[in-house]
Length: 286
Image 1 (spheres, rainbow, N blue to C red):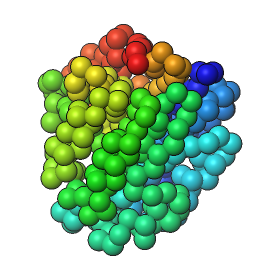
Image 2 (image 1 turned 180 degrees about the vertical axis):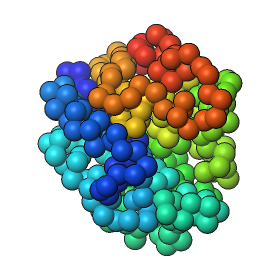
Image 3 (image 1 turned 120 degrees about the vertical axis):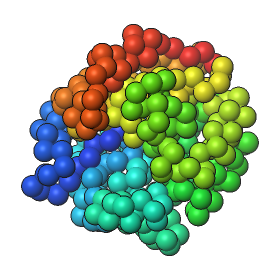
């Protein structure tokens, strides 16, 4: 069986013009499109926050879809908190960017624009890929659907979601930022599903705007892909063959830092956002 290549990108943060939240994004994404196409992946997976205000503004979701369609490559899109509000409390705190839709997932703007289900699964070469869209409290029954897919899996699995299930750093802002304010009532069950099914080799996520690789258990590695739009502008290449997965960090066209602009007192070395050498490249055996 021939190897297959999957590109994992995340956190594009596309917004209607004029861009206000992250003005660098249009230039960053324009510069990376040709690079993505030239790498000729078999699949592109984007793990959420495709937009800045898409949960409130369907036009931004349509802009993000147009950008992905323009790559001319097969892709799977997963919703982040800016694309599908995670809970009603955050909707009240962030009324312009995290609108919460209490109706079933398939009626949300995200599902209608991208034509996706709560849980999407496909076989790609020697591996199964599962995409997860989840909101706090799991009103869409995503976790039961995920469990069904994992229980039936006959191949090694990579699960793609937006939110990390364990902290990506052991100190600083990213020791606490991740899931606790977004899916606090659902993260423990999601983590338990990932750790109890030994065929899950990677849980690939976004949200944190850094390039990281953190073991969840001995058999499962949590991997975040940076933020291709506002930074840290990195993404992942995953090459999968019958023996396992090799992963490599690639650099986009935008800033390599992010948290120094939004976290007061941030003072960490570059590796805090870009990851160590071991986080940037490695391999996992089947």
